[in-house]
Length: 508
Image (cartoon, rainbow, N blue to C red; front, top):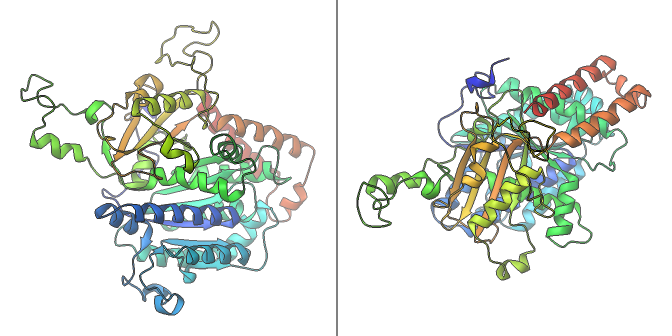
């Protein structure tokens, strides 16, 4: 294990590219395919809302444009499958053990008219995994590895410049969780230098599957060993967002997937890097001893304001996953409100950033019920609450974060509310990276998305671990896993791996 003070990235020696590239998405299981469909619908909608170079950047990163390598690598013929040969094709591979969800995703994409999936990049069978992680991982994993890796390889070869993998999956089932973990490890073996980011949906705590505690911890253990970052999207939080902020009394999975997709799109859409402070950390002429009129910028400053383009998955895994032993990520986004209410609301950058900061300190992904009394101590040993050194009222600790600002003047706003060094350990080389784009997002004049490596996932993981130990000690359902090669030793190893990660976060 390397010292965290060295600032070594989670790649553990892998070399990442120095320029943006196209992202290949792998959708696994029912949940992964449904979230992926919503994600590409969001990306296509945002591309249509943009013009010029921004639209081209979105299409190049996430879609294959027509007439480019149309017939190579087994790609289906556009004119034969679709009358409109100008439809962009998602850079995605769809995998499930049952064909129904894959076929539904293909139909939804085609019906949109904006984009489509390539039917030659789908893999489906007629038998599911029965919510058994061991069956998906050990039984189906070996059977589909060669075919799945070949489909993914063909999609990678369609990229002018390959920028990494995004895997979408659930953590509670058999295919998305078990087979998804196997595919992630296979991709790490086949593409050891490629950034690999997992977006995983955490199950309802009330229970979706009777064995979800086993499946979830086995998935987490496997992904933490091969992925550069694991984004945990909690179903309970997505559901509350729909009910309390979108005013949907009975949200469907489509509604919840749409929220998750928008959060992810807020990170993935094109942006440029800047500094944390006001004016992007740059000095205006006339505001300093350099002279010049008020608010004027010299040519060098104007060019610098444009910033380096954010390098997609590469920047996500290097900026946020700065410590190899801690790779659990959380997403927060503001504002979230019904579309019909957007035109009646007024937002300011300081207000949005202040609420984002408090959401981070409170450890919540919702802006309702925030504890405004929480404040960091910046590593001070003063006993603020009389009990615990260096903390007040138990605020959520954070390794690092990446802030994405979208909207007018997002390159000038002071982001120090979220970039405050007191929120992060002093040894982190770049605790908060700030990225901006003047393009509106989701029809809103201003939008803030925060990707953080913090303690937010720890409480639900701890509760899931406790339930798993109880089930294991009672011998519940263990025989179903033993039939597919997961016994007491494998359970013990997975639980210990997750406990080690929890200990790392709790030590902050």
